[in-house]
Length: 582
Picture 1: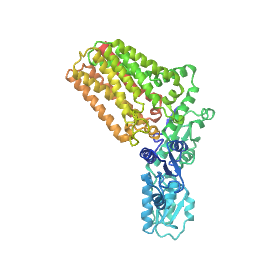
Picture 2: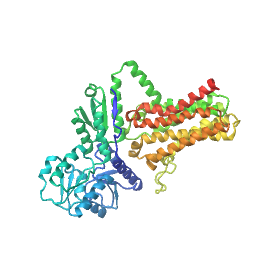
Picture 3: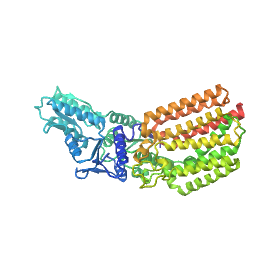
Picture 4: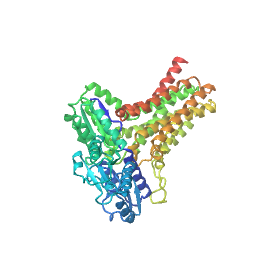
């Protein structure tokens, strides 16, 4: 059952921006509720989650009196805005810029005596907001080409705008009919570019699939439009809100399945649908194939794969530093990373089970096993460090202690009310930095200390920089992928703080630094020729960045394997150099 996922599935810019503003408001106003004027998005799962975070919809100004209210992406009429500003302590405007443009056009032309015709759905919040920019009796809404004939014929000046979530196929014939009756009409196609892209993509997808799954709220206009377009192309179409609505006996009859989602559909909902389809796909396969896949899933999701990668990095560092090979150093690195990453996964599990997907869902289902692996790997890390000497034992013990302290409240609740960050894990981006430092300690510092500092300081420092960059880049790539899920649960990662594009630029800068360090290390004789061979890893990481655009692959287990495969690759290159090429 091949699965083809639309590239543009999930939150659009306007919805993501509204979510970010709402969650930022909860941080700023921790002691009070944040209201949204109507549901923030037309998605029940997202609204339920926001309510759990004290962000609740309001329909009357009495509810939000002296409170904080957020105008959702659909926008509101100017009169409603004035009422909100009169009664609320603070009004946060999260109107989508595309909607704001349609409102601005309608308001400007209405002030010049034009009648405003809106191509859209009667009663839709966005359409209501645009109508509010037009004097009574000068605004009209049409949903079909036939309705154009019902418009007054005595309109001298006409301006046309569109609800941003309309389809181009619906807009064009209606606009053409309007133009035929009012030849001088000013027509503005205000359909959102992201909406158009989604609709174009589903048309292309419909040609290549046997059935289509459209994910999103039943009240979401843009999601319903996607389902309509799919059906127009004769494709059996299932409009669902959650993965639980999928039934194997209905889906299994189709070979290739297309998946797309509306602009207000959360990231984790899409992931869960894809994973359920993969479960259906596995049910069709032989027992042997299912067994192999379950073993691979166990190996990757339990962090054993990552631990092997950490051991590989420790081996490569020994080669770079020209140290005598010591299997205990690789074992220590593997056990430490297994312990600390398993602990981190436990700490970062969302409390709401509906948010779980992929590795998180696996951890939640296998809590006893993962707890055992966390404790046992920590004991093994301490035991191996003891064999390496007192200094190594102290370094590992301190690192593990700080890892446990990372999640504990350093400032108890009730103390210093104005302080926002009470735990180390609350500090934005801290997880990525502390993880990178932990890897550097067990992968570089302890091998250096265990060999009584026989390695020159420049090689030691450059090796630390290499490991720090590799781990930070890995974390940032994962954070870019999971940005929507992190936004909705209130986790502040680097991409959330500075944006996806700036994070991608930082990744490129870090990879550039890594390239320079590897080349300079070899050119100056600090490192052996292995340093040049490790440039292959830089190309490999860039390749993983390319594959993020292949959406179905990007969301799955294979992508996790590819990202962490960079560390395995480093070990393979080091082994080949040490035992074959040297």
